[in-house]
Image 1 (tube, rainbow, N blue to C red):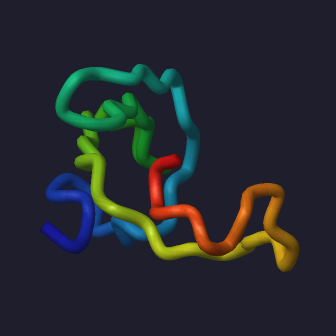
Image 2 (image 1 turned 180 degrees about the vertical axis):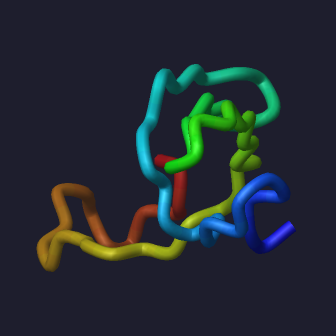
Length: 67
């Protein structure tokens, strides 16, 4: 579903977030469309990409990972 079945509002443009909850499956969000229709969205957990990392190392570089 790429748009609201009631009015055609684009799904990518969330009009109002009513609540968000963490679950074992991911994040569940209850949203309201511009027409007033309440929608339930689930965003599953997934491995994210690294967006920042430190340059230095606080451990001995010769030590095996996990030491």
